[in-house]
Image (cartoon, rainbow, N blue to C red):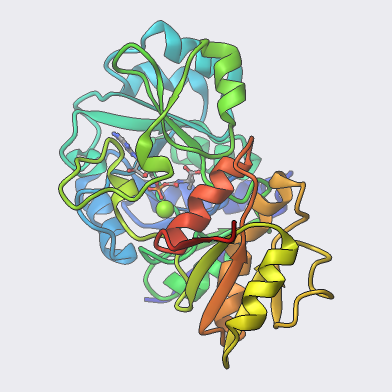
Length: 344
Ligand code: TXA
Ligand code: MG
C-alpha cells in the first residue's frame, strides 16, 4: 500500500487536507495524525474492522485498549455511558489537552477499542490539526501512538513513516509535537482518582482540581507476570530502542566515573544538554537537567537517534521524577526494561 503524505501548517489546518483525511477515516481507512503529545494512528472508533486494522498495522497486543479522540468536550456524553462529577471537573480544567479520562463506554463504540473492557479512555486533543481532522471526519477516532508496538512513540512525521510507511493509508504531517510524551491517563472508579499513566498533565495539576490523586504502582514498577494491570498498556515493554538502555541514578560525577569503568565498543550516553563535554562517550542529549518539559519533548527522538547512530549499550542520565519528570522517568524506565543502577 502507498501511504499518502498530506502536509499542513500546525496552527492553520489546511481545510482540503483535513477534508481528505476525514473522508478516508469515514471510509474505514487508517490515517496518522499529529496531536499535541505524539502522532496518533487514527481509525474510526465506530468501525470494528478499522480498529482491528490499527492493531494489525502496529503489531499491538489485542488486550491493550485504545484511546478514543473527540473533536470537542461536548462530544463526551454521546460516547460515555456515565460521567461522574470528577470527570466534569477534569474536562473543564484540562480539555482540550493532554488528559485521557477512563469512563464506562456506550455500545456504539467498536468493542475492539476497549479490548473487552467495559470502559474506554477518552481524550480531546488541543492540536488544531487533530481537532480539524476529527471535526471533518465527524466521528470519534481510536488512536494509539503511531509507532510499531514496542518502539519509541513518534513526535515527527518522519518517525511515523520510519515505522509505518506502506502499512497505513495516509499521514497528516504538521511538524513536531509540542509536548512530546503521551497524555496522562486517569481512572475515576474507586474512592480516589488514579493516574494509570503519567503524561502531559502533571500530578500536581490534577491534585489542584481533584484534591487527592493516587499514582498507580505500575507507573514506577515493573508488573510481575501474574499481576493484573489496571492499564493494560503498562504490562508491555515499551518505547525501547534496539540498543540496551541502562539508567544510572546518581550525580554527573558518579555517572562519569561509572561509564569510564564500563565502556566498550558501541557504548553511548543519553545525557542532558551541556554534559557532552565532560562525558567521554558518544552522546545523545534530551534537554537540560532542570527542564523536564524539554526532556519530555526530546526523549523519544533521542531514543530513536541512539539506534540510528549504532549504539549497542546506552547509559542514561536519570531525570528528576517531579512534575513532567514523572512521565519522562516512566517512559525511560520502560525503554530500559526497568534496568536501573544506583550509584549511591
Ligand atoms: O497522548 C496520547 O494519549 C496518544 C495520542 C495519540 O493521543 N495516544 C496514546 O495511545 O498514547 P496508546 O494507545 O499508545 O496508549 C493508550 C494507553 C495505554 O496505556 C492503555 O492501556 C490505556 O491508555 N488505556 C486505554 N483505555 C483504557 C481503559 N479502558 N482502561 C485503562 N487503561 C486504558
Ligand atoms: Mg503507545
